[in-house]
Length: 465
Image 1 (cartoon, rainbow, N blue to C red):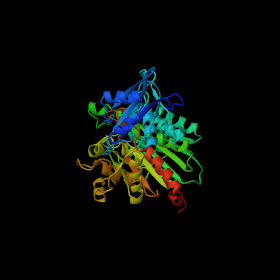
Image 2: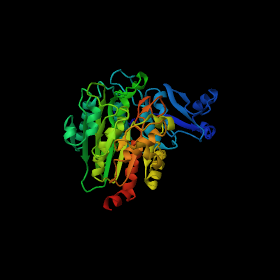
Image 3: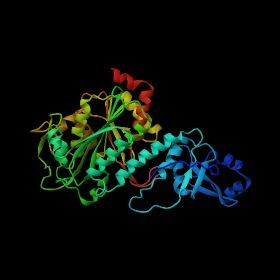
Image 4: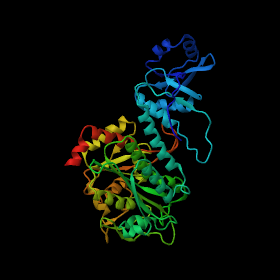
């Protein structure tokens, strides 16, 4: 679906009322609306909606923002699920109007590929002073990624994800290449081949490049495991139920790439997607197998359900050969990250303190939050293999997200900055701006970070150094 703002000049008003300003706001309402709100004992509690009578039925509405501490800047997005159909406009200033408008669009998302969605829905007039085209672009890029994650694996296997990347690249004039099946062995992507060879759909590495060759290099790598059985270390049935979302890293990279290309940011963008299905068959890779990676490091398979870091290792090694100025990877990588921070706050790993501070600040500023965890060097030795350079799944129950990040770090040496995001890619329950289902996390923040570093000259300086 395409999300757009309304352009109607006859939109009905919706007032946004905090507990602190409700008394004065109520006095400014038309007499009939004021009397109705008083009789209804409306108190501006967070998320509460009061429809106001008009000549032809509903004439307007008041929406409660609650108190200031802990207020979600996406809260006005809930209006997209509460208001009657028709065009609406904020009648007073939203606390953060661009985020409020974005949240309304994001809350309007429906995944309708397999089931008809409801008919007419409310639409919002873009608030004055907000860049409507920019907000629509961000919202539609996020929803493009949500569609990819929400599509089940029978319709979003390796070929379909490949096709989605191809279509996005073609729409923006990017140059795409793909290495498929046994060609992965010939082109030195042995880990991607090993993980994906058991599936009836061939594993592949898909990449595209957009922008001028002399521009600052920004590279996005996304884990594209279209379904994860766990391999021979097979997952229990309940753990497989959401495994269609294990390509959420690739969906995030594609959503972020779409934002960058639609905004025409002056970068040389490279997107690299290792795409596989981790299936079970006679050709499946096994615990105890050892493979030599693209970087030359040998990796023993401690657990076939730790497959994401394997395909990322080859993809990151490829990305690193180009010495990008900014190298980001996105992956639905570990359950340990969810235990530590829950589904809504992805951890990230970055060795550059100043860059990490920018990431954290922009995450909260864009309401696309992330939280830094350490690349804790003393744990690095846990990865050492006994008869190989590395083991992909160190024994022991602790620090699983950190050791996964340390594993990936072994494959990055030339990039000027590398940032790893251990995303969840899913909203377990609906919240304002975030319907239940597939979710794109960290992409808007990364887009804002690239914009900021271009604006302040940090990215250009890095490219020239």
